[in-house]
Length: 229
Image (cartoon, rainbow, N blue to C red):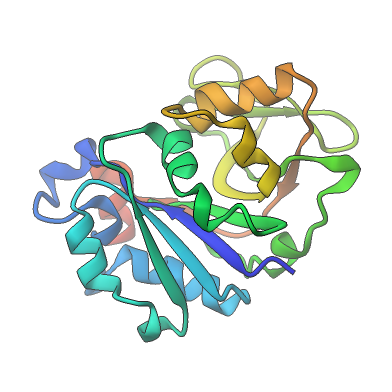
């Protein structure tokens, strides 16, 4: 069973700085607590034991807030990128903490879905798939981009923002084989570089539909909707 997860928390969160300028996006307060606490508790309840926080911007504040993970019953390790490397690059930079795992979970640090995740974590990587992308039904394709899948639930294409609406969007929750780490060479974007490369070179990425309310805090509007004044 997958018991290790990584969370992307290194972004600067430029759009959100008009409402939270003194902390990184992942520490934006929600009902008096950092948003990241919600994700960590969510992972713990799903059976995750070890979390690698892929940090960058305001690393010290994230480490001070989360410590060694004992507050959540988790073992937390930090991988601090020296300069912004992109989502793929952050994962690549933290590869030494993940490469010994058969599989691992990866979460965006600015989104949350009200779903237990246990079923998603238990999904097998069938037909030597390199990973599974959690998907949700949404009409907000102009914000998130769309996934195109075949009858076997394998992803055949990615339509980025404003290109096309398939009704399925990336929820920012992934399960990957550790083999993925061998396919990232440095600074890169998962969404724009790594995933298209995998599809174009015959590597299988599956989609798994997640039910539940999806929230992200990437913009002032979405953050204030989740955490009204």
